[in-house]
Length: 153
Image 1 (tube, rainbow, N blue to C red):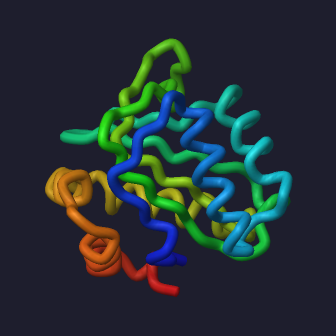
Image 2 (tube, helix red, strand yellow):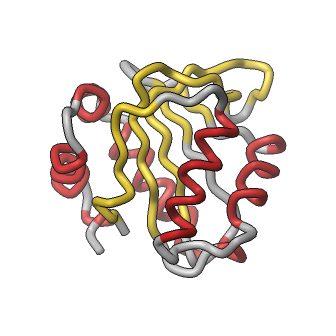
């Protein structure tokens, strides 16, 4: 599920849409998603935002349904400066996300289970802080693998 080449650090974007397009392009180029993935994620984000005000670092988990996914994976982007997303459950509340995790889950049944596992793992404040201060994709990869079986390919 976790591809080290889809962990990117020290990124800056002008907008959440730009970040989603970047991550979606990486997932597409590596063969995890179909061409429809990016637009589908953007549309879903407008209707059902994914910003989460987790502590000490806010995250966003843009994703879409399994129709646009070939093989399950995720793209994790750790930003230099947080980006404005809308809060999950209340689009009127902004969330300044420093970590963006773009999900690509190939089965509708596995989607909720994986999202639940991911949120449980990322509710650990220490882990989020360590990810946000990590200096390399290797460091983040090891942190994530140590945190949950669901990330192992």
